[in-house]
Length: 212
Image (cartoon, rainbow, N blue to C red; front, side):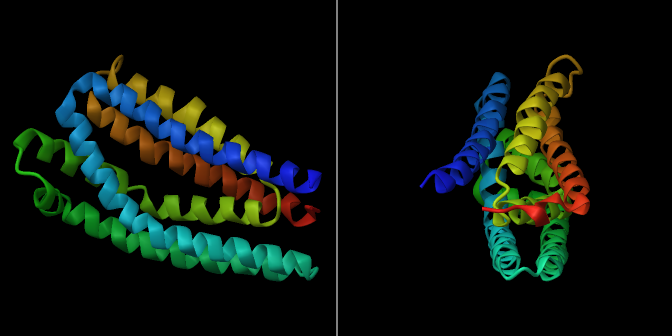
């Protein structure tokens, strides 16, 4: 029982950090009015539809990591992650390109308010630029979780999202004067950092030695 709790505890904190970081962004975004909030909400809901299959691919990779590490085949575990990461990056790269090209028509489906439309299309365009790295980060964090190393992605989420994304959003939005666009920019920047740091730790390979 203790082993289960020791593994699950950081996993729960990991998702709590990720969820509350979005709330932090909404809090900052509220400073720019209801139109900014409405526009960002529209963009976020569209993006979540694209992220759902990507999360599925990442979870499949995580499952194969656990299976292969249990079978004492870390080489196959690593290969599984690389395959999942490759296809996830291709998938979200294609979807992200579509969103970038058609950000305005897509936003126009959900609102006729000119101000909300501007915020929605801009948020969709900016955040979609980081989709390929989002995909990579999903799979690499999934690999750590699948190996039973739930502490590593929890630390990464805290560092990149609460110590990175939220303060960066505030800095860009207010002191540097980018407004709501600064908040949108902070999202792909922080998730790209998360993917890069996850890649470094994945390459070091300590996750292969994890024992649950």
